[in-house]
Length: 379
Length: 135
Image (cartoon, rainbow over all chains, first blue to last red; front, side, top):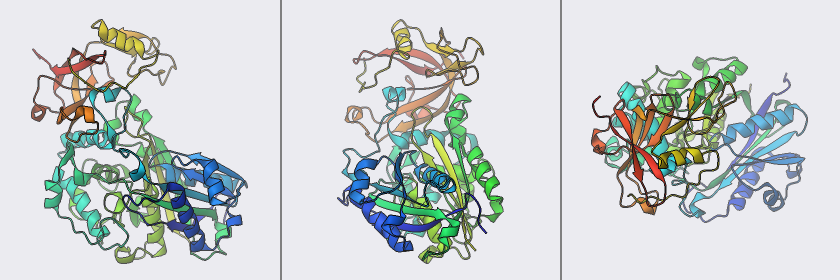
């Protein structure tokens, strides 16, 4: 039996993901939409709600895609966009505004001049602070000073995620081994972050189709149920000056999501954490509670996030070694894991996945939003 | 005089801060009701008021920092590697800046620092910091 607000991900479309593909963004979105429809068997006319994720222009999108939904909204919250769109989709389905909502993303930063690495922040740009690597480095420096975290421990995040990616076709890291020595020899970007602490911008599209759990029963694929969702906002941590200690406003997001799902951390089989930089994984593992505060570095270095570890994390290689899709990378991998489609890195009997996203770099306080999703294999 | 890309344009609400720098004053916002100090311009999260600019000590400690090696902007090609620090001011707020009179390799979290103004060719007088003298 399903209740109000019980929704599921029923279709997933992921285009080719790569660097300098030269594919226009709206075509990526069309490819993703058609792949997601083919995945679950929904008709074009079934898609009656549309959320254009991360800055795509709704009006042009709809005409080009040939869709005629009840509504179409733009939603942009950086790396928290995918889960934020899931929250919106559940709301409109629960209130009867739509029955099937497409969360559609297609982005080609390699077509942008300069990419996204060098964008500027308010007043800190006067002092030369540009781009997310430098602002995340501020978290890493403080973490090292407070807890003794080392560059090698950050490197162990990159190495572990490459170990996953190298056996997953379609990732940038496929068949490309990476050692800790490679990490240590990679050039410095913004100390203490080296090149291999940073993910790359990639081009690609992802579409997620969401409908009620009830409707999901008739479709082609086993539904992936949305168990709990939550958000938190980092600006609060700027006010009380804990922003660099917390990385993100994870506490409130996690509390709401786990509370709604009625489960605990021990129930989570696999974690897909938004990982623009290695430090992000280390600090999220701590703040979600998978390890003690300050112990994220030794935790990853011990193999706890690898196959058979305490919490297999970013099992598709993550953004660091697979591809970057503004929050859709961890969401897509969670769906694959819960469907048993994780290929060579499938976690046996994965029933519950934790997914996170953070972003919308806001200047002084680094990232804005944090979003948490708990997804489960529907039974 | 330093050359920097100065495409930052403060609006009327931020302008008093930069005018203060030109006079050699380091101003922060203080809420007249709660007494809490803020930077940058903000309504006090508890009282909703703010926008009173008050001279601050210019003293603090380094909360965190990074040394930037990659040239994100061509104008910085000659400056890399350079530091960006976040100062935890004595009054409470965090403030992004640069540390001068100190080798990048000697910067540490917790280091006491003090304000020093620098003129730039772009017209801004920038509040920078140096290791605090005399403790």
